[in-house]
Amino acid sequence: MEKELKFELHLEGGRADGHSVPVGVLVQVLTNTQRAFELIGFGIEGREIKERARLPAETMRKFELACEIPVDGSYAVPMTAGNTSADFWAEQIGEALDKFTELLVAVSSRSTLEISKILPDSRLRKKVLEYIREMAPSPGTGWKLALYNSKKQKFATFDDGVPIFINELTISQQRREESQTITGELKSIDFSKRKLEIIYPPKNRVLDCYYEENIEDLLYENRREMIQVTGKVIVDDAGLPREIVNVTNIQDLDMTDFEIKHVKSDGIFLCANNNIVMTPFLDESKQLISLDNDHIGICVYAETREKLLEDLNAQIIMLWREYVLAPATDLSADAINLRHALLETFSEEDPDAA
Image (tube, rainbow, N blue to C red):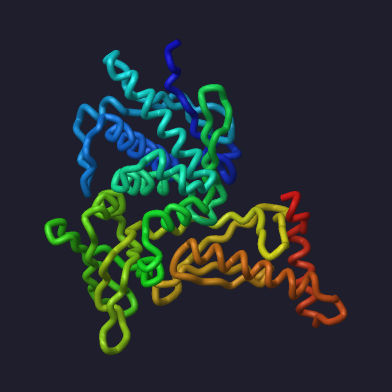
């Protein structure tokens, strides 16, 4: 029986529940799905992966994904895997789809061992995982990516924890611990020297950023004015950034709205009675992304969206403990008002049921 080379991408939550998604989100998901699948096909062909995988035109044509007409299902995009115009390609395309599906399941379930078994070549594994990381939602954006097989059965779900998990797999603990994220304006890129220059806003200073060859693909994807560079920051005598070495990530500055539906931490599970939408903004230094909501007493800031979402959740739980769970008789008039605002905004549910 001929294998059906189909699967579906479902974007769920946020605007996707109304059957529409931002163009940027759709492009992000489709582009990185295509590149991850191509690389897996590259490995199926038995080709050797190098620091920068420049895929042959025939490989790209063979493992090309085709989108069909979107259908209901939050926002669902049916996909056909591979170009079967040449009959002898079908077997390799089917093998690549099986491996791709297995890998997505392993990432969804956070199974490090299975990921290594599916892609034993460490170079190939790292590159494929980097693209899969970019398929997942940014922290706080309120949507998830669900993947369905040809029988309409869900086999994997990517939430905003997937990028953190993949970073832990692909970047050593020492590098993560010594890394810092700097936000700046992209000034120039010198591919021959593997160096880019960004303007550091607090001092209007140009910082040289040195990256390894495997990071270079990210530069083709991220060419907007404001970017974030993560790596080891070298400071001058005054303690100010002078250059960035051992760059582990380069990405656009993502100022997408944060959508908060629920918060779970330390045995407390809160559901928003209505989705909370907060628009991030940069502080005066342009190094910290900030969120505030006067109604429920929120004011948080961090270098990255990941840390900002973590701090936002922690602050909401802290406010709930101090103003809702505390005896009302211990609260001032202003604190009572905040308590009422929190109770209007959130409902507490059983964390085990959640």
